[in-house]
Image 1 (spheres, rainbow, N blue to C red):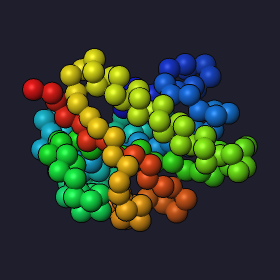
Image 2 (cartoon, rainbow, N blue to C red):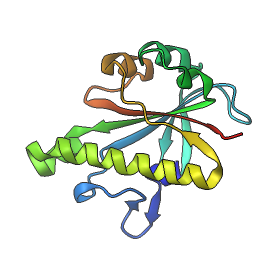
Image 3 (cartoon, one colour):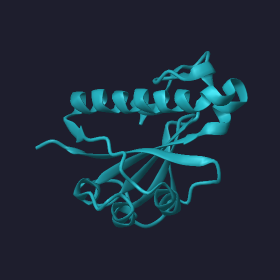
Length: 157
């Protein structure tokens, strides 16, 4: 999680992925099922405290699978990361250009996760084919927060 959105400079509060105007529109969620040492559920990454906060108590990977064109990597992986964006955070500063900046930032975050995964022998794949409203319902996202990427994560054997 730190590689995706962790704070890498305590003085400025900057994070590991660049953000247009330091508006930080990205949020990170994990859907966990059958993982060692972590209870099943949906977690939100709290970058300030560098902790996972459980927001839903049950394993929602199957529900995510159903709204993501039934891609098996979602149910096969013990952990599935969902990257979301809150466009309004960036719109306040950049207006109509905000959308492209949020998409760019999501790409930077995903790249960081890929790079960290290589270092830890954790495999992933970026999934962009899903029903936006369905993913929002599965994660119980607030209005104005939108799913951008899904990344199943699992140990490479």
